[in-house]
Image (tube, rainbow, N blue to C red; front, side, top):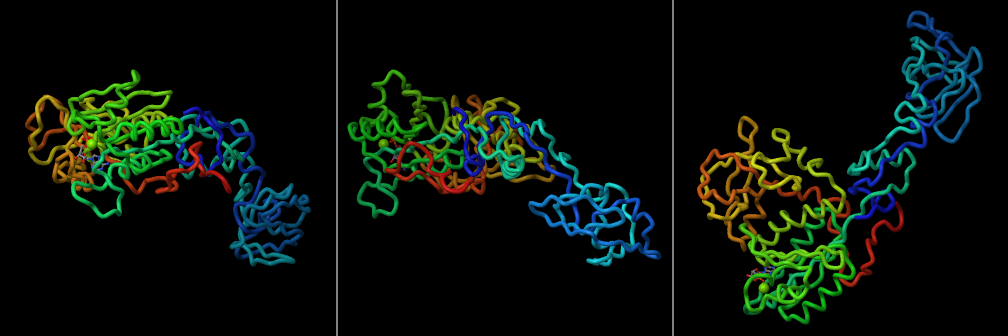
Length: 438
Ligand code: AMP
Ligand code: MG
């Protein structure tokens, strides 16, 4: 996504598109790191428990927009944490080393020169590289940008993703089901997945298998988003509406991929908008999202392969790159696991069994089946931690085998504004977040 300057709130979770160099010093001025008294070290050097030194308090300096006068010789200035240091002072006597006096103060311990003084620029000097292009902006990075007074960093904006499900059997969630009807779960799942992947999501009501209805809904979305994701209607059935309609466009390709789940797939870039047509089975749709859509969204967000908190989160095996190279380097959650129980896998297809992970005593991740492995069985996926990656030629996986796996995203990391989605019918021009404060 082309870089754009945005307010900090919107920049959270985005990737910096340019180096940020400091134009200011942080701290911006010499200041006190303690509540106490600004002093000249030489003048209080004799202070001890046995022989406290009494000094006149000539000033009181609070944190705030003040410019204190120079410290008068032979006096100290009461000073608060963060308040500017008066000229001439070279140390801070912390409050605890004194009787806390206001007119005069008894000091019973001598500070060395420079104690508890925060010097201008000691965190960041003007010209310093503050954050490099490509950095993901989390809480500390956002704070740092604010500290160096950058209100609108250049970031790769979040891609807008439109989600459209197809199928005449679908009804909206919350609707009583008639004969042959099912609830449209895909659009909700894919919308949530896209949100977890950092997109601004627009989920629209599903459409039937009528080609005109699909074509009309699709056209509207294509004009108003950065990515379109559809589900259903791409296999070999008579009413496979997505394939039927979009096959008219040379930009779209429909393939049968040697994988399970998710054999039928379609993809193309139409008018500059990547269009992913995922299969209809709910597990196929989500697994396809993980394998194809998430990496594309990562690329659009400007994320660099491997450098992700998700990979770093796994302390024992942070390769990010599976030993067999089966899943490429684009998935943030690629790890290597030990298979904990024998499994079968069809020949000639790369399969992605849904597995739960545990650590064994040596810290290695051990994978066991997360339940029903059918492409329609969402319950297994909902309890899974990862997708195991079983190579095409492997038909019997014995316990103890080491295989790659893709960690599924932790929903706790759903990101800023979790659940916030562009609602249907909203102005499609872009995010409405970022207005107001920021
Ligand atoms: P399709 O790819 O359209 O042939 O759909 C394959 C299977 O997935 C069928 O059993 C559909 O009923 C089911 N399916 C398709 N779309 C959805 C959806 N949005 N939510 C839940 N199940 C779906
Ligand atoms: Mg269908």
